[in-house]
Length: 180
Picture (cartoon, rainbow, N blue to C red):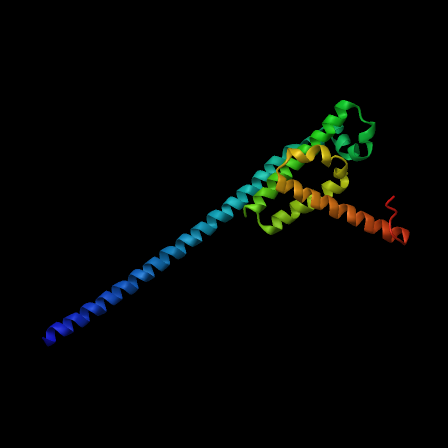
């Protein structure tokens, strides 16, 4: 009977060792899979960044190569009221196109496909775009062309810009801005 107890103890010990080795193997596999998944995520993020560059490059190259387009882009915010119908359409189409790009950037960030540092640069570009292109003057006609979350984000940035502008005006004049 003593032999059976020793055999049982040895069998239990071997089972314990097999379980420990199996757990170590599973842990190693999970670690490798996690590492591979993180690498794939980083590659996907890099591909997204490259796709944004690929989307924005033709637009920027057109601004460089086409003087009329560059003129619309630079002067459109101030000269819009003086434009004919065709130039108004062209300018608003430029605004619309750049907003579509930013909507894409916004949703990639919302889905975790862009790092914060990359998104921050695009967000700064959107703020600059809103400021330079006087977007608040065109937003009413454009806002329904975008998804609501992005539209709300743009409205928030417009409000921040208007608040900053009013604050700078207060500071420059030494008192509250006249809101009449």
